[in-house]
Length: 501
Image 1: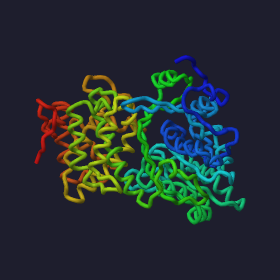
Image 2: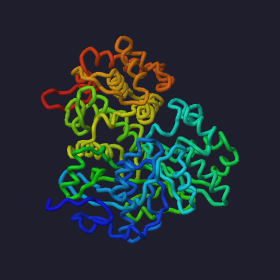
Image 3: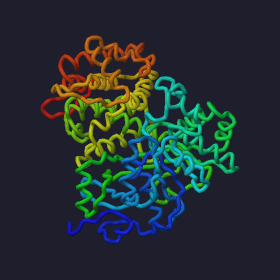
Image 4: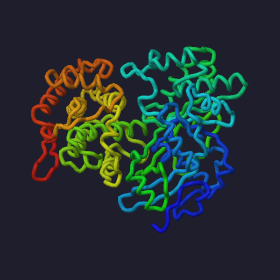
């Protein structure tokens, strides 16, 4: 490294890595994106940047936004560097970096979300995107309906002009657009939820109906909420990632590392136009549900298969779990014999071929994706990713032995200690409740399944209940590795799982 460049518009010409060739001062906004984390900047912002590099979509620049006080720190970092981001691609064979510039501002974070509402009410904004995590959509975990009783939603319905939530702000902006005789924008969820566009529509329309039924009808008739499948592993940023950016000569307070893989499949349903993302690798398809089901079940549910036991055993990264023979064998068997059985092929990809791809991606040691990050919010991720697979397996009369082990390992993690005695720090919005039940389940495993908000009627499914009780008892008695080996019948001489039954 010959020089270190402070990242800004003024210093782009001093960089030795790829950077915007377009005039950022001439960009105008067309998108507000709520939740400007690492994934968004490595994924949606990158696709738009590639279009801009090709001389297109210069009227579609992104205004970043947040609705929680903790978003203020990210806003401060990004504004200090003109909303530029260094993306560092960690291919197993090499490392490369580029600076992307498709985001041009970050809206002020205010109580009542006034700045966000005003920005979304501007008719120049034609898409509002969201990456607010799977648990951020106010979904009842059992009924999957809208959680109208949540305190934030009750507040927004009572105070529609000064909402707390992203959905309240969207409703308020759509009200202003309707009242001004303008059309709506497209709501584009980029979160890992099957039917994410349908879920976003449910949240927005349901909340609007609580305070203004006529507005809800107008939104339902005129706005669009396309479903999409998004995929790119982008770990959290810490000192090591900042140091990696410096190795490329860039002083970036919020760089993003990511794997050498991206996928974005979107329904082509945009009420106010869209960028031509398909020209830079995205796919517009009427089969989004098939793509997202494959990804959510094999990748996202697969993450939970690995992360919970990784925490129990004190393995810090996802690639580290894949390097553990017992975990890798357990992962492969539960995927091949249970999870993939519920997934249909998509054009050009079978479930087992996709599993091979995921195993390669998860094994990449250069992607420092922590088990703690992946295990976060298990109460939403297990109900959203794992339990639907389990229900499908039960309905088809197929094995749930491996999935029962996965749930038992999650219960063991939620007890709050690793097998070496160290503490697992709170890692779920309902951690205290989970921890109390997990500790009770050490003596009476059925207690874990009696959490109706998570499992509904699954506690009555004999095949699942009996396998879960047996696995959790074995985990507490003999340890997680012994349980995984009992499941896969690992041959200790070669670390390979043998076929059982």
